[in-house]
Amino acid sequence: MAGSFNFGEWISARSVIGSTLNEIGAENEKLYVCTPDVAMSLIEFKENYPERFIDVGIAEQNCIGVAAGIALEGNIPVVMGMLPFLSMRACEQVRTAVCYQNLPVRIIGTGGGLTSGGGSTHNAMEDIAILKSMVNMTVISIGDPNMIRDILKLSMDYEGPMYIRLAQGKKDRVLYEPGTIDFRIGGSVTAREGKDLTLICHGEMVGKGLDVAEEAAKEGYDIRVVDMYTIKPFDEEAVLKAINETKGIIVWEDHLMAGGLASSLADYFVDNNVFPGKFKRFGIPQVYAGFGSGSELQEKYGYADENILACIREMLK
Image (cartoon, rainbow, N blue to C red):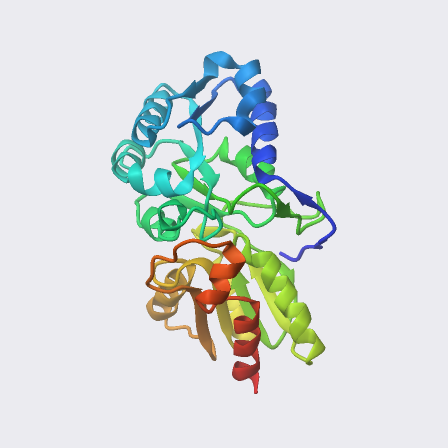
């Protein structure tokens, strides 16, 4: 699905979460919101629906357990928190209390990739690999903050658990003109058409991918950019189209190179005996990245804009 994009606006993804949950809460009495002491963006919901708001304190395991219990009573709980802890500290509770029972718990939060600034303990760099391995779990990675509203609303009628990944969530680039994209769970967006190579990204890297494609165009390269916002299940049709219509695929993600979206695509190539002309993945190597901003660490570990542009030149020379 092609979309129109606009780099003229930056908004807080956390604020969009808060306003959307408050809006849904007025229409759907089954919506509950749970948090492990990460409630700054949830003030509206807390004030308007206190009987459906639960803050368990800094106890992610308990938060997931409470959410599972609420779901067993026929409700739809959304857990809002920090993703490194929701994906790892509460890993067993997500697997056994939520996924095993196939409950409609929505886990959404910030800290995806190396964006937190809090060092290795506060960076969710393994989270996609962990969550997509769990039976029944759907995995979403948000690039455009306005997308959150659509995905959360769609999730109210979606079966099973869902993990929704954001970057830092304080200042996020709006990529698509509101109302121009018909998002669907399991879909993707062709953010830029191109015939030479396909750059598949998710989350914060989509905006960066569009920047790189513009730079590549100055050198005569026509790069397609696909926003693969659904990691599991990913849009197979968009991948096949990229294989058939372009000379190769680059996957660029703020996640460990092993276990993320690129690994899912590589499995798909092998299992279905369909292969791109060329294939390259960029992301976090097998290191604990330490402290620094996301852009500083991406440059340090070889998956910054200039690395992608150099790869495009090499693949198309």
